[in-house]
Length: 242
Ligand code: 5RP
Image 1 (cartoon, protein in one colour):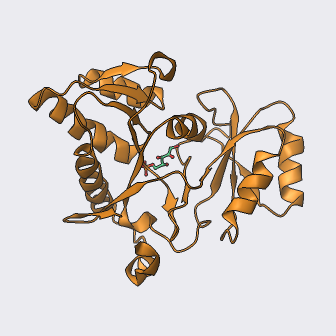
Image 2: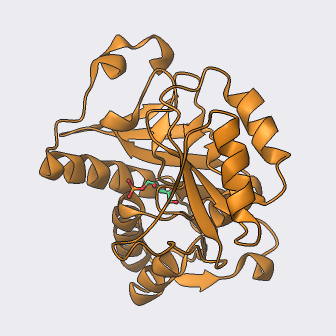
């Protein structure tokens, strides 16, 4: 659908944080409507998911929905629990009907980059365990080709300098993800993060396959052939694709 929509290719983020927040909120609210009574639902991570959880909690309360959630981060789990949603671990449920998560970029073929929040490993495990996946984004994340957003890798600290050098030799422009004190940002699993500043990814499947075979990489942020539906938030409405 949006592969041929030139509107998305022309969009450029102009730093309007209030507009972005409104679009994320619209996407989260709309996606909450996909959840049905008795469902087991995977909840992603990030600011768009925050709006989803808020909207979902309202539905759970007002419509007395009986749902169980599996969260992809402690941040999401705490918020969901605080707002009255039952949260279990993935190993405590026998299936996931639906997972709703944010994304950092989505291309014309529904492929995505995730992991801006460093949660891609848990997010990918939950996404792969789910019967259906929905992504919720603001319209500025819709791109023709992936790669403008740095591609996140979760890496084992042991030997990570050697891995970093290997990535550099391959021309993949790695950068450590560091905090304001120049310390490594740690993932949920106490691993490091490296972002690949690729600019443009011509062959996402080939790159994903190469990364899958590099020892030391726990998981990368290419989410290929994963999503079923994309909910794009706009200033006053949402678009559901397909
Ligand atoms: C975290 C993710 C997030 O879903 C992605 O970064 C989008 O975040 P936000 O909704 O805050 O823009 O993949 O690892």
